[in-house]
Image (cartoon, rainbow, N blue to C red):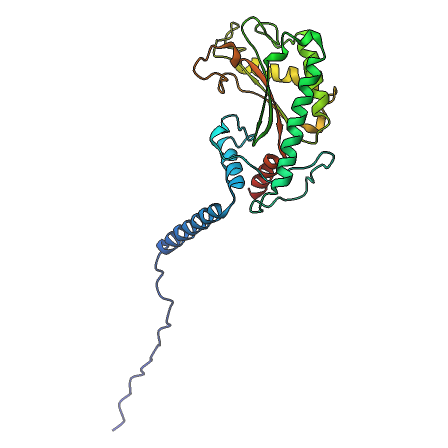
Length: 277
């Protein structure tokens, strides 16, 4: 007898694959953890900073466009180091937000700004034609720098009624201011403000346009009359959004031109925050 044919048995080994994916939920949890840790370390960094740095950071987040400290009376005063007259800041240098402020330099800059304000007062007193309007110029030293306000009053205005046309004595006063500010190295911001009375021309031209045009009218007079082009940082109009007399939006004192001489501390902090972005 012949042997029966034995069946051929083929054994195939299965390839072992990778374990199944666990999904992406862990990535979301990890991202939340990293974000929370970043926030925690940012808070700890802020807590460790000096009062001056905290004040300037708070001022920036109040108005990141230009460090408007007009409502900064409640903030702690101070700032990072200032710059002495004749020493221009290095635009390429990146300031250190965590550096301790040089109080001596800061106080020196405050003295320079106060001295500039006093020189402007003296210059205005010397011109008899300015007697009517010179008492309507207010000077304030804040952590933002020197703020010069040309404030209108009932029956006494720097501009023709409802227009951006400066009166003759107003131009002369701006020239005196520009000549003194041109001796500084600080940036300058020019702002226009109105009261809440609606402009008579209607929708095509209103308080926003009027406040901006008045600020630009002041710029045109000051620029080239002592104020250097590179000093001008911004020209802007606020209409009636930042009232000088908040309790009475129609008070004529709300109509004003603000000339802000920014401290080097405020300028340096803004540059640092912008660089961080």
